[in-house]
Amino acid sequence: MRPLLFWAAALLCASTWADAPAPAANASTTPAVTAALPTPPPLKLGLIGPFTGPSADFGVPMRNGVRMAVDEINAVGGYLGRQIELVIQDDQASPPAGLAGAQALVKAGVFAALGFCNTGVAMAALDVFQTHQLPLIVPCAAGSPVTAKFPARDSYVFRTSARDGIQSEFVVEDLVRRGWTRVAIFADTTPYGEAGLADVRKALAERKLQPVHVARFPLGVADLTTDLKAARAAGANVVFSYTVGKENAVIGLGRQALKWKAPQVGGWPLSFPFFIEGAGAAAEGALMAQTFIAEPSNERRAAFLTGYARKYQVQRIPVPMAAAQAYDAVYILMHALFGIRNGDLRGPAVKAALENIARTYYGVVATYERPFDPDDKDAITSNMMVMGKVKNGAVTFAYPEDARRNLFVQRKRPAP
Image (cartoon, rainbow, N blue to C red; front, side, top):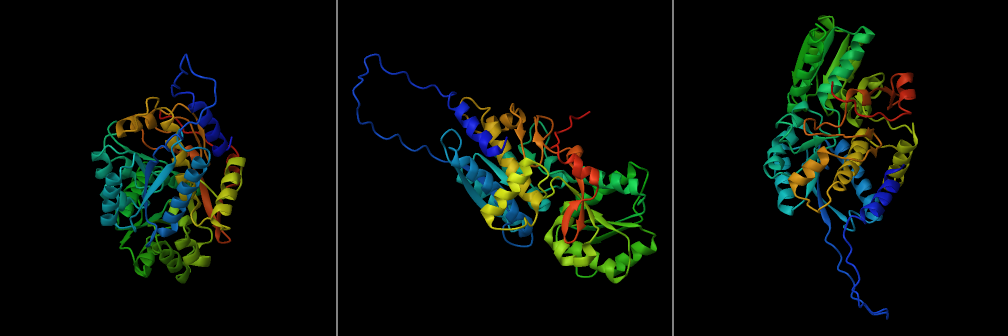
């Protein structure tokens, strides 16, 4: 069932939860003019992310995915007659701006928030949500520390993107299967790069492997030739890059200039325009972990892609994963709210509802059956992922079997 149709049905069912007053015993049957009922106040939902600045290429699709879901929900009545009102803060991919934006959302009185695309920005702001017991769902930022900063049972931080620990493990497993075991790691010096480097090292160590070369670099670096030459001299047969911006393209173009054929692999930032458009032909064949590839492989995804294209007048979503994961995050949150029968929308009640969602949500990225629980705040498991590949300037499935498997939307795999 499409999310909008489900939501309309859910609202119809939910309307029976409220106790309607019984008519008075001596009520007259004569028609009378009644005063219009007051419009209930909107339900404020926070949204924070990089909508301008260097990470806007995936911040804007995240915002669009959220708005698309909110508009669908409001079109059929909102939450029990209350419209959802987005309170938006632009963090500009800046930790200080992210901290200020999080504080502004608290001051605005939002009942929950969605957001963050950059791990470093999220880490600078998480204490605000935790201290104020304000549930936060992270649709984009993938750094493993984001959902590990606080003990799981106490944490108000949830996530619908695949954490980098899962992405790194997924990609390393693929590299070993291909025989690419002499790995050079190129990681930026941001918290995202730092955490990603640790995740790749861990995934390699579990297979008794070590990187043959490690390069660290700041954001904005324009030339990595020296490190690329060192990696090639060390015998690397694959380059694993961990950065979110144009630096991925610097690596690709550097390999091309050296005529070095070692493939470039990594997490989901290799599906971003900064890399695909910035590296051009040098991006062809790059491999990356994906939860969602923008192909109409089933009815849910076809409806989402068509709806997004129509609403935002675009032919292609710049970063489809950001849009789809954010869209699903809104519906997961709303499903949780329908588990609250007494109208208590304070933080602890919403947190408990997210940890105990009773209804399965048939989403765009996955089928969410208990996406969270008190001990697990990450909705994505490795079986929900596929390997993407840059082909003709777009991301498609690296393996035909993944394309076939993607016809059936995956469910979360229970922890062993």
